[in-house]
Image (cartoon, rainbow, N blue to C red; front, side):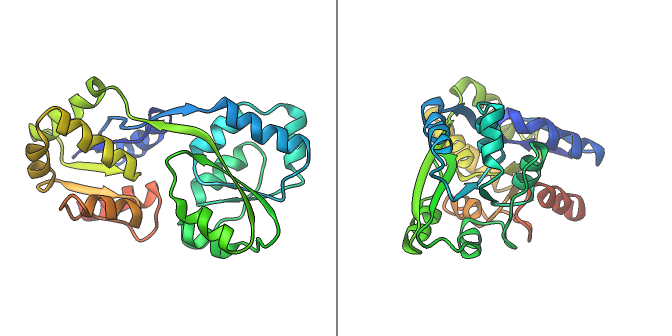
Amino acid sequence: MRVAVTRPKEQCSETIKKLESLEMMPFCFPLIEIVPDLKNIKKFKDALKNKNIDMIIFTSVNGIRVVFEELNEKEMEKLKDIEIFSIGPKTRDSLLNYGFYSKIPDEYTSEALSDLLNVRGKDIYLLRTSSGSKLLYDTLVQKGARVHDIHVYHSKMPHIDKIKPLIGEIINKKLDVILFTSSLAIEYLFKSAEKLNVLEELLVRLKDMKVVVIGPVTAKSMNNTGISPLMPDEYTVDAMIEMIRRKF
């Protein structure tokens, strides 16, 4: 089975290895490039220095990586006194690799995360991508928190020449399954196909493929294109892979 993985290149290799262990043929086609925002990371570091933080929320492995790459030993020490939350098990495990424990919600969504927190009157630093949903921010503000929405990285569309090979593989029926872990990846794929004047061909072919998405937000984005994707009960990449193994 030929499977396209559309995650950023920093996360592709782990997914590829897991698919290969199941005797599948995975291919990495990153639809998102991660660009750290050093200016905004410095804002967070300054707040850390001045002890103005009650809670920190991480919503992705990428956010953790770009932040911790910029922290020095003293700043890491200051983090130990702050309550940290993350959106799911992969984010939690990434933090554990740096020696930090974080709490996670039972359901791995922004909505469930906001329900987990007692935030009234607290300074919360939301460290995430500039393309993140406003829902978590708005919910925390409504609950009485002072939310500092710090965009520690930007998700950028790769040059169209890097996306063109994936579009060609889809249209030429060289792939059986495609995995999407973000709505932005879906948006960038369709934008590129439109620029190449092959959007209709792409849509027709995707309807014949197994399109697997990570969660309800990504599913909604795909449904808006007229394609009904498959989605696991647990919103993780591991659950996506397990669903592929069971169903196909």
